[in-house]
Amino acid sequence: MPAESPVDLGGHALIEDASLRTRNTLRVQARAKLLAEVRDIAALPKLFAWPAVKNMRALVLGEGSNVLFTGDFDGLVVTPKMRGIEITGEDERAARLRIAAGEAWNDVVRWSLARGLCGLENLSLIPGSAGTAPVQNIGAYGVELDEFVHAVEAFDLREQRPTIFARSDCAFAYRDSRFKREPDRWLITALELELPKSREPVLGYAGVRDELEAMRVQGRPTPMQVAEAVVRLRTRKLPDPALIPNAGSFFKNPVIARGHAETLKRAHPALPLWPSGDAQAKLSAAWLIEAAGFKGVREGDAGISERHALVLVNHGAATGAQLWALAQRVREGVRARFDVALEPEPRIIGAHDRNLPA
Ligand code: FAD
Ligand code: EPU
Image (cartoon, rainbow, N blue to C red):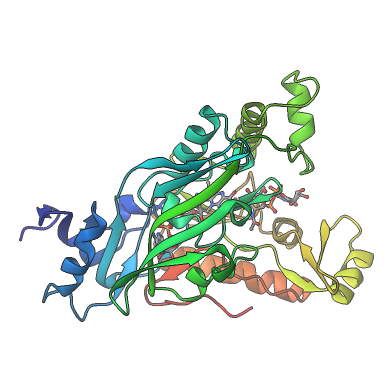
């Protein structure tokens, strides 16, 4: 089979020795031994029963906006391409949606807002597939996905059968879920959301009210207006991956013991800090990285964005290993200066095929 020419096997297309460069938003060069684009859930058992695939390691890849390849992937990359958004139930208060994994997340947001459903407006413009959204329980501007999840449909790659998780079985937390904790076990095939027809807008996150004021919105904003404010804020704050390749926040905001956080706050009064439960506090990783002197640094083509200190960028031809080496220097710098451990947000895939312990 010649490289890069897909072979259609009915329900999925297979590519041998596939380049992953255009399939990750850091635009890192890496190759997969085999890549399957799956358009039909019914084709999954057939794909995994295929002799060439049977004992291969599998990696599910959406739009590649939360991964860093530090080397090639010697296995099968599976990309869900199933499409479709449908309303499966509705009353005067809310509607239930079933969204196939291959839909783009931002299209789901726009689709729901156009039909008078609300809740997703603060999650506008987050890159990636709908099927990936539960993996790290995407969140932004004071809202997290799990609030709206009714169920997650998945294919169990170990047992080779479909399964459905109720929201309470997904172990959702800040940038976390059972799907993130059990990598390569679940292939999410669809997402079921329950969206209200009316709700109090969430405007408490820094900058949202100011942006609405700049848009001359008076009184209670509509969900569409909140979405526009979020789009404007995000466009200004974050580098566009189409112009400067990146994976969004490269580290999670660290959650540490309240006592340690208060000691840091006394020494650095400008440090942004939010209470997290009774005994912990969440710190701004961007602030820590900027204060440790890394904002805008560049080592060859690997860099930290000048616009936002939490964003690792590829200025052109950086390899995954070079980006990872810079990320580790940032991590060591922050630990040395503040005694705080930063944990990567994206999945690291390749020679360094694991996330660091906290
Ligand atoms: P991928 O990068 O393809 O995959 C991410 C992980 O999920 C991998 O471990 C992969 O194996 C697994 N995975 C992918 N699809 C499936 C599936 N169907 N079933 C099971 N596992 C799967 N995130 C936020 O939460 N909030 C933000 O505000 C935000 N802003 C961003 C801004 C920018 C500019 C960028 C580049 C990224 C941002 N992100 C943000 C991160 C990213 O957009 C999300 O994590 C998104 O959900 C990733 O989707 P993806 O399809 O690109 O995932
Ligand atoms: N800050 C700095 N330097 C910078 C940028 C920010 O010091 O260069 C400080 C500022 O004090 C600012 C604070 O950090 O007030 C927070 O910044 P921002 O509002 O940009 O949010 P963030 O904590 O950096 C998080 C998410 C983003 C999400 C935004 C908005 C994480 C790891 N990141 O970023 O998600 O879009 O909040 O809710 O939680 C992602 O996950 O990829 C992502 C982009």
